[in-house]
Length: 381
Image (cartoon, rainbow, N blue to C red; front, top):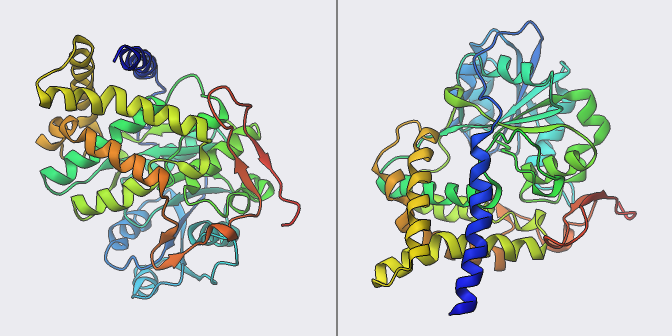
């Protein structure tokens, strides 16, 4: 028990340092107009039910010069809907061996874009006027920008589970938009919304070099940060909403699958990150429910409650689920551990065998005391 107390105290200090970064963050994006022509690329596979609001908003935005929808082998009416709304539809080809579908779709869309400033958006996003201009303005100071949205959650259970998962990101990496960039192997990003310059991305072969990663957004950001790119993860405020899942079960299945960041995190960091989550969020709740919390547990529960209040701003309609989210932290820790030990390599009807995931990739450092990660070229590419 004494050893566990020492470990929990160390984890608490680590979490406190990370949470304290929220006091000094880059300003959130604000609505901006731009005269720079921007191409928006939307990769889409079976998105007929969700892509409409995204495309309508983009096509009505004067800052958007073109909207390129990449039909990533959709088996529904995604392509016809996109074309009918006025987007330029690129008929994507099947991903080659070793490529995850989204990276291949993005590579094709960026190649087809006609403007140098490119914004990529997922089909389930809902951009507001001024978002594209704000991202374009941010490229004056950064080479790769991703934006954190406000989340749309239906029901108390879905919001509570989603907020519990979101809290694990803060405990592992701190709030988004740190004023001091983290080392490349600790950079995080949101692939739902990214901006960069087309020429630079194609020259860097960014999507090709992370083509085998399921956690493609973080892999790309860490790779390019290691290359020397200025990478920023900014708060989009009220300029972007996303409706990721239809239920709490969807949050558990899909977000729980990707949040461990297993394929971009070395084994030592995986253990360290899971330890922080278990010791500072899950253990205090379990001890409280058993009626035997320590003073440290109560302090950690107080900190977690304050974080829950702060996370309300990350939701389009913050409800009681956000404040109840700490109660689900033990379940979230279980899900992160499960997905770390047994990662899933399938998405939208496609399965990606690990044996095919060679290629050119980002190699993470093994742990907190390991070497710094660098992009590594596989000579057998």
